[in-house]
Image (cartoon, rainbow, N blue to C red; front, side, top):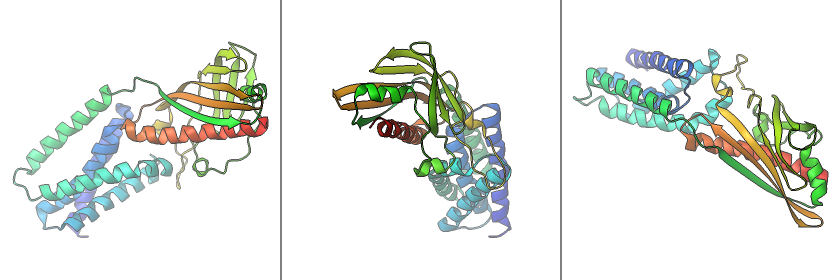
Length: 307
C-alpha cells in the first residue's frame, strides 16, 4: 500500500467521521445514512481517489475499501463511539454497501464524467437525500412479536406463574452472553386493572401497568418505563452509544392463556414495539429474533414452574 492509497483512506475516514457525527448527534438518525450511505462512501472513495492518481486493479480497489472499513470500525471502538456487538450485527449490511461502493468507485475512477467536481456534487446531493429520507421516514406502526408454547398444566396454575415468577436460572442461550438484556424475575404490586407489574431484566426493570386482568385467560399491560436493551461490549472502554436510548421501545404486551384440556394450556406471549433504526426490514429481523428469545426464556420458565 503506497502513499496515494494511505491518503485516500485518510480522507475517507475524516469525511465519514464528520458525516456520522452530524447524522447521529445532531439529527438523531441511525438509518440509511449511517448504515448504507456512509459505508458506501467508505467503499467508494479509496479506489476512486487512488484511481485518479495511479492505475489500480479491481482486487486492489476491494482491498482498499475493506481496509478503510476495518480502520473505521477500529476507530469507533478506540474512541468509545460504539461497541463490538452492534458492529457485528451491522456487519452484513456494512459489507454489502462497502462492496457496492468499491465497485462503483473503481469504475468511476476511469470515467471522464466522474471528475472531482461532478463527483462532489453527486455525493453532496446523495448525502442530503439520505438524510432527508431518514428524517421523514419515522416508524408509525407497532410491530407485534408473538411466541407460543404448550404447558402440561391446568390453566389456573399457569396463570399464577404468568402474573409473577421467581428468579430464572442463568441463560445458556448464546445471544444473552453478548450483553443483550434478559429477564430474571417478575413481581407485581396490587391485583387487577391498575396493578403494576415489574419485569426485571439484567439492565433494570420494565414497569408495566396492568390494563386487562381477565383471570385466568388474558393479562395485558402497557410499558411505562423500560431499561436499556443491552450492555455494549468494548475492549477499551465502557460505552453507551445513543442507539441504546429510545431507538428500540416496547409499548405494550400481553399473556394469553387458552385451555386445551384440564391439564394442558396454550400460553402465548406478545410484545408490541417500535425500532427507530433503518433499514427497518434489516433491524426488525434482529429485534424480532431477540424478542422471541426473551419470550422463550420467560415462557419456558413458566412452563417448568407450572409443570
